Image (cartoon, rainbow, N blue to C red; front, side, top):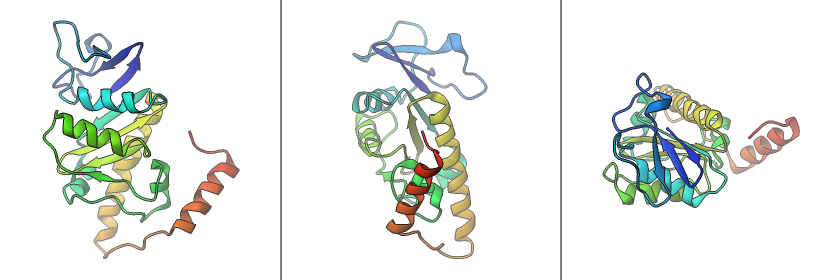
Amino acid sequence: LSVRHGEGMLISPAGADGDSIREDGLVFVRADGTWDEGLRPSSEWQLHAQVYHNDATTTAVVHTHSENCVAVACHCQALPPFHYLVGLFGGEDVPCVPYSTFGSQKLADDVSQALTTRYACLMANHGMTARGPTLPIALSLAHRLEILCRQYLLSRQLGEPRQLTTGDFASFKAQLSAMGYGR
């Protein structure tokens, strides 16, 4: 997890998990990529920093290795438009960026590029990343993507699910707007 903070970000430390993250354990990484001695930032700090650099409206980034996202990402393909809630991520699918070594600049570049027009992406043979204007929204999107990946995997047990059309997504967006839903 990370949040934009001043001229940098606060990010979970290397090796942290949901049970070990504490407020006093967050690492401040400056815009120039430096941090104070002590705790090291997550190995994916470059990915988080690049997402913030590419989009000024993003204030939180969530990167996980959640089970169902990993399972779909290991097929190196986008999550298709099998359900209307795929539209919450800014397009008609959730893209999957090519595999790159964790912690690499190449992975940071690919993920940040995918997230310039989307709120989440899968990472081939790795996991997922979501971004949002607030931490609760970024967390909610990460959770929603995990649920959708699980539903997609379940639906595939009956064969390839029907995919929604561009027209279906246009109606979805209009309904979101009409009902006042969304970020």
